[in-house]
Image 1 (cartoon, rainbow, N blue to C red):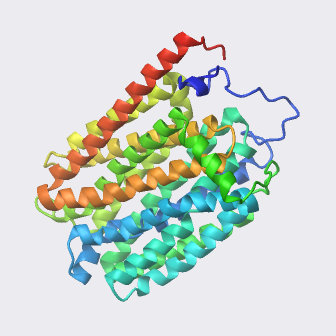
Image 2 (image 1 turned 90 degrees about the horizontal axis):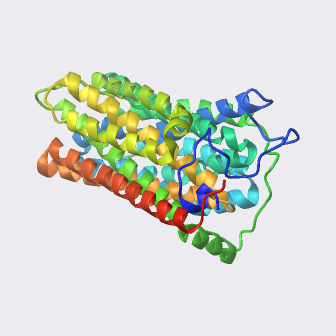
Length: 427
């Protein structure tokens, strides 16, 4: 029985959990034909996805000011987008099984960037929330399809690194979107700022379509609801996959809560920072780019669970540091939270792609659905806790989520030991 079956940790340097590929394997590998174009294309897709998805997050204090609403209400401009993605990611993954990964990703980006150009003209908070929900639903075709594309087109040993690069694109998109909107909004307001993000996303979408190699290993599947339901049921019956889904959701609960509320905290005393400086705080996303890209090496050294423990500990340390009323320590806390989150996300999401033996788009879609439900929950719970208890309330929500990650990891380790005693691991 393989480690994927038992839930045992797997690593880049460990014996593979799938049959070894031979020289005739035409799937992409680092340094091989098409790999660099593929990596850049999906990196740009990740940039566009996160820049659009979280375009309003750094601007929430300005949104609150224009519409006269509290943080908990303005936060719905973020939660609606991530919630729309969470709801539609599974249906969109089914379309990718039938019509192809590249086709669905291209269509998703096209609709999302079109909506992004309409967002600046929203006449009310309700209209803004509705447009953001539509934008999130459109983006749903991208994350799960991208991971399925990589699982089919990249050799297994390079999969963690390839997915790490895609996640790194997410971090760059999240960072650049927030930094750009912060400075643009300081001079011209939040509407111009989100319009600029829409234009940047258009450029990324066009480059993505021109660069991404045509799939060579995609085999069309069925759109029959019964087949889809059976595939989803199979994935939800897999204890390891369910643990990975929960871990992704909990990590994103921390991240969504912290970055939805941090702008409000930094505009208040004792910091009282201007919008442009607050936007620049998101440069710490560069740390996420590094930690996501290094996920493969981290798993190779510590195993999957060891990497997740380290990611959780790093995130929790960052949360505690952020409680101190010193700007340098708050920034250090954000650095650690960001590094821990992106490392944990890259490890968990790549493990899903390696564990699923069929219906990879649906397996990835379920992970993405859980992940973005965590984002919506984090945005809402973090803002509500901030309104009730201040920053300490938001940190409390985050620490509970990290405790959940550790608990699931401990349970998985125990389950793996029990399975190993019953049937020795030979892989």
